[in-house]
Image 1 (cartoon, rainbow, N blue to C red):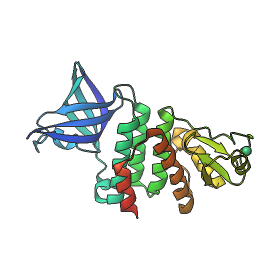
Image 2: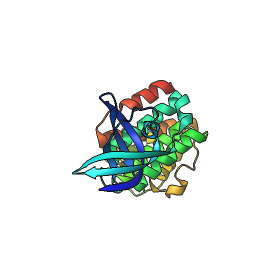
Image 3: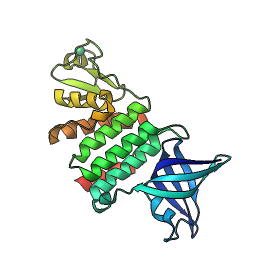
Image 4: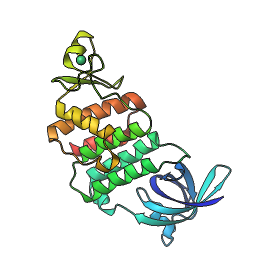
Length: 248
Ligand SMILES: [Zn+2]
């Protein structure tokens, strides 16, 4: 069966002299692996448009669950990312996150839109990479069904008090008093960090990246998002370690 879809190349692997396999996040089929024949022929338009982090229009052929890319035309190559090692390492972390959390072989346009928007802002705006990172981590988890309960203190129902605490293992929020009374251990957070955390999950997509936070609070927010992500995925992301190393 032949079909066309747009997709972002998340990973590429060489096969022999000429061919490669790419892993693509597509709008219509989620994450799929596809062969690209003669991909290394530099004159072939498929060569550049099936490279890592290219967003391309793809003509695919599917036979018994095996996909082949017949043609590819690039829409956006995020060229500017390639000159900035911090931004590029974060973009690669977004790819690894997508490989882990995006659905396979089912409709995924919301996931694709999220990653493309984040890459666009990473490439063309001066938004802090840590803000983009926290939004992508939490929204991807939200889309995948891992919603924490951030409305209020899980014990007394208080919406906002000093010394709120987030518990990554359960995805629950506690006020300082209830955490103490119940012997709950979590990550303490200021009100502005809790507000930002709520924003990453509950805000409309159009406004997702539209907030600002002091650098110190952004760091605290990222401690929370990384801990929650790690509890859910039980995975060490090599690209995240590399991004952190580069950002130091
Ligand atoms: Zn409470």
